[in-house]
Image (tube, rainbow, N blue to C red):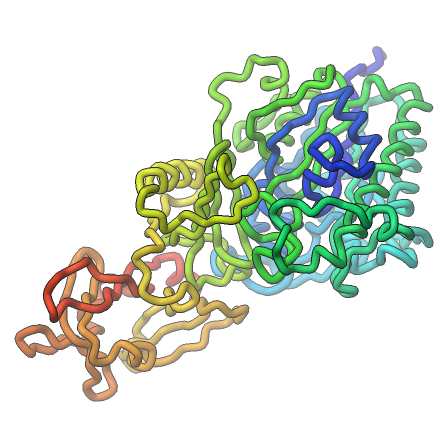
Length: 580
């Protein structure tokens, strides 16, 4: 039998690593000298981004080539469906040995979701992952579903092998994980090419210790770091953590040498495609109350270096690319035609200069902290979020409000939000249209995007909940979407929710019909009294569009003294009605 000379593929994957930690992306300190050398020999993608700045969702995108709302893994704690077609299943079917070492984060499911009928809870965070939940990795397998739950940066820990037996390590975690990566390379079947996914958890913070855990002497080695422009002058916790954060990245770089040397010792380095990337970045609690889950480049921009057959010469690619482009890139490198459902495009075309109509923007979905969507171009960052919806319960929305607009040419560190700038209305409208097309291209419904400048109430009070007729025939609201983590609805009378609007002159928009008047209470029910003193029950006004949601908006400008002070905008929510 003729030897299969297709390239081996080794994907080295870090967790929560900013691109600017690396010398090839501008870091002055010697944090990543070996990976910088890889970039000089291979191809560096100057502007690479994640499609989802959360660990599990980003991994689901990488394994399937689909967006997180398509895989259903839109947040952490949702398992990749057993039987899903992945890069591993496709490569294995195509003659590759498929291997995985490190953090998986796609085997456990907990809590419910509004938009999907999830499987019953299954907790494998500290247990062995059974074969049907391994995403098609059928050969070498040493994995913990949630590696930070089975180990710490210091003190060792454990994972599980292919036979579901516990395997331990007693050293710094990056060193311990690399031991198994080298073991995999030494034990592999030399008769066919292989794909090895090396999934480190560093430099991700250790949640239970609430800090980044670099190797010993990190604080001393990297105490003289420059402060990234997006962090300078901010609060957050970067002051106490950044040296250890860089130390984590340094440790991965040092261990990369062990992987490269193992490939060289086997005589296969030149025929191995090496990919280095991360799932998302870290803003060190400067954009929200944790480390990612935001639209900012500190969250969504990642390093991406590829070196090997077809990727050589020290090229630097300026075009915007996404991790969603890596699954078709990997398959193309293996001589396998990517399935048509994959959302990205092979990066080989950019490197060869043959790519036509390469997109000049990238798209990201944001969950847990919000139900958000983001568009990033070379010049603009544009982000929207669904007000009031719970990003851990709701995967998608119909209505979004503009949240951020940054001019990246003038403001590369995203310090000045211009979403309310009236001179940029045309820019916002153009970006909203592009974002809507991206969402449609990801299998989502067309969004309705509202400008933030129209809001009368703060964002956390915009969407009160889902309005419906209760079993007593009265209007009620299921308040599962009021900036909480409550998964089960709490039903309260509609009239109680409208209490703060009582006596105010308002416009009530139900569907395409506007009604002007004053909201009052009559017999425990909310009514609208018009200019002639005629009363109409809110139930009757809303019945054609129930179940519905409500937004409170500024009304159209008017010089009249009796002009309405608010517009209550009710819109249909068919998806919500199907999940109640």
